[in-house]
Length: 98
Image 1 (cartoon, helix red, strand yellow):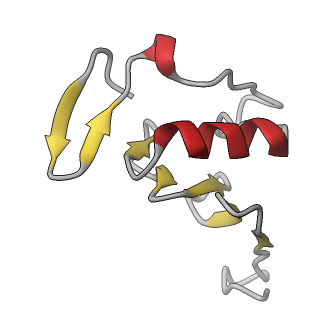
Image 2 (image 1 turned 180 degrees about the vertical axis):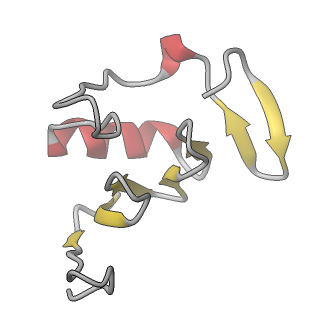
């Protein structure tokens, strides 16, 4: 994620590090994620309809949704600002199975 606050396109904003929530790494191959659902919901309410991308270009916050990705940049968990949580899993061929 780029430093500073700038417009990266219509409706896409790069947020300065000081304004982002705390992230944690569980292991070196896992993309940084928020771990507490309450903190995720608080962040979604604070961010509103902005789009925040990670270093891989994945939208981690997108119009009231927080999205966690696996090492292959596939969405594995989505939490909406209403608190709805969806978890995805993939089979051995990489096809979403849930």
